[in-house]
Length: 290
Ligand code: SF4
Image (cartoon, rainbow, N blue to C red):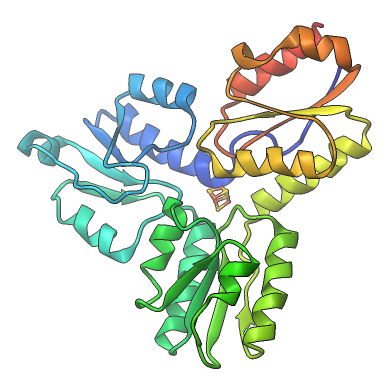
């Protein structure tokens, strides 16, 4: 089987950075190393991290109470994930009394900065994204209670009257073409709206690599990554949008190699931003061996 691997497959720099920060604390003997919610949306990698002393507390949306003991306060550290958190959550975590390290991806920090700056000037914020995603929930905390999340055209039509001062941004992992399409619709309602394309470079690269795989002759694309990973699910959706069969799997064990063998001679492999190299590599090797 000929296998085309997307150049961008695997950890983005923001996820890698957060893992490095937490891992450094663990290797230096900090115990426990807590992360506010799963450090990355990948079960296999979380298991490996847990074995090194990194432990998830809180919940996926960084919304629940975190209980720490006196011993945790004494010896542990609490690390914020790449998705980032709201200013309120940051203060809450700092007040727990443990050492605190913010590993928010700088690309998410830029989005938060734009929202903060404009909301201070009286702008309403419109975020294109998933209202239940922790990144979006964190960003909403910078909108001075004047933020609205939109997923589609209908949500834009249902926005209340926001006046002249409207600022639109995007969750970092959304589709670029969809963002621009919705921004045009927003401008029909709010012609003075300021629009910032805040989809991160790593996401854009991953999305454009799907076209590279297709142009290279891939007859189907295996998308490797966690079921909860927003950017992995979007990659699979993008493959289908390109009219290619998409196989979204978390591990090699989930992929039906016999089925692939019976249908294709050349397949592409890509992976979400939180998919570890060892998982991707196993799939690539097994496909090549067919
Ligand atoms: S997907 Fe983009 S914004 Fe999110 S952690 Fe990775 S680089 Fe940062």
